[in-house]
Image (cartoon, rainbow, N blue to C red):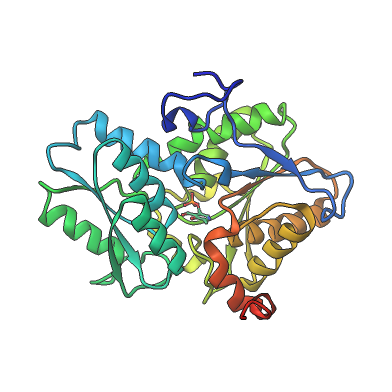
Length: 321
Ligand SMILES: Cc1ncc(COP(=O)(O)O)c(C=O)c1O
C-alpha cells in the first residue's frame, strides 16, 4: 500500500497507523493562549467515521485470529453506535454478521447508520450508554445472547476486552508522539469504554511520564452519546486511575455549544464529545498557560443533527418550508 498516492486495494489498508495517522489540526481563533498551542486529532477521518475504528479492528482481528468467527458464527456487541457502525461495516466486508444491542436513547441517525452499515439491530430501553447490572441492560443482554447462542455469537466486549485499549497503545499513542515530535505536554480525551484514554496514556507515558493526561466527562443526566459520567464508570473494566491525572466534570450542555463554535469558527465539524473535550482543554489552557496540547476528537457532527436541534433550538428555525 502507498500512503503517498492513497491508492488502496481494500478499505482496511486505510486504517490508521504511525505511517498513516489521522490529522492533527491546530485550533486558531478559539484558543485564548498563544503559548499553549492546541491541536485536534480528527478521528472522523478514519475510514468508518470515528475513533472506534481502531478498537473495532483490533477486536475483530483478535476474534478472527483465534478462530472464533466463521461457519455461521458472527458477533454480538452492546454499543452506543460508533463501535457498532465500525464493527458492522468491517464484519460485512470480511463475511461476518453483527448483532448490535443498542440503548433506545441513542440518536435516530446512529440507529439508521448501524442498519446501513449492515448490523442486525436489537433496540432496548436502557440508559444512554449500555449499563451493567440491569436484567435488561444492553451489556447483559449481549452477554446472554453470547452465552445462550454461543454457536451463533462471539462477543468482542469492548467494555472489558484489553484489546480495545491495546489498539490505542499500538496506534493512537505512537501517532501523537510522532506528529508532535515528542512536544506533547497535555492529552485531552473523553471517557466511554476508556479504551482511548487508557491505551494512549499508557503509550505516551513510556515516552515521557510527565505528560498530563486529562479526561473529561459530562455531568449526570447527560445526553452525549458514547460518554459516561464518573458514576457510570464502573461499567468499564479498562479504566485505570493511575493513567489519568485529572478528570474534569463538565456541564453537558457545553458539549453542544462548543461543538457549534468549533464548526462555525474553526471549520472543524466536530461532534458533541469533541465539544466537551474542547471545553475541558480550554479550562486547562487557562490554568497552565503554557504547553502543547492534543485533543482526541472522536467523531464529527453529522450523526447528531437531532441532538443539536434539541440543545440549540435556533438551528431548526427557518428549516421548514
Ligand atoms: C462519540 C464518542 N466519543 C467518545 C467515545 C469514548 O471513547 P472510548 O470508548 O474509547 O472511551 C465514544 C465511544 O464510543 C464515542 O462514540
